[in-house]
Image 1: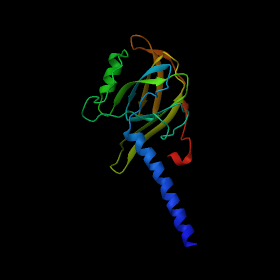
Image 2: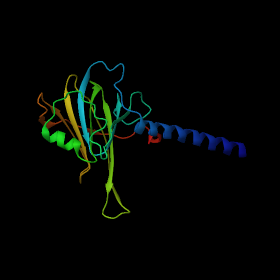
Image 3: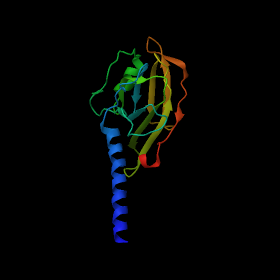
Image 4: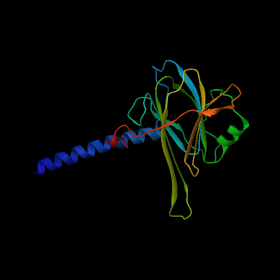
Length: 189
């Protein structure tokens, strides 16, 4: 009986360690365009918090290849990790991305297959023992050759907004549909 208990404990710790390593990877390893991406789309992400991505997936699974950190907010340094792919930008977008607590990045993402995003941010609350948390996971299928701007904002609604943008950086009027998603497996959290 004792050997069985030790074996179960060892197995539990091992599985928990795998989940921990996957979660750690998602916050420390940068997203990269998959080598087999084929056709791509461009996306500028402007976020009031951290954004992580999972290519080729309609759910969150940090163990998938090429998944990782896409945007992290700057604190006191104006966009230290901003990748510029020369996507046209309006003055309003430029002001937003430079705000304290925001971050931005321009990235290539694989087209014609689902891509999952997870946004997370916390802000001070009304009392010092309270923090407002905004967490949202969404997915969409990018069109080949399209250029997008995605915004994640911690407001009363915890907003995720995606639009195609034109050659001047202006957002087209229609929102691109984002589907809510979650973790692929319960143990992936």
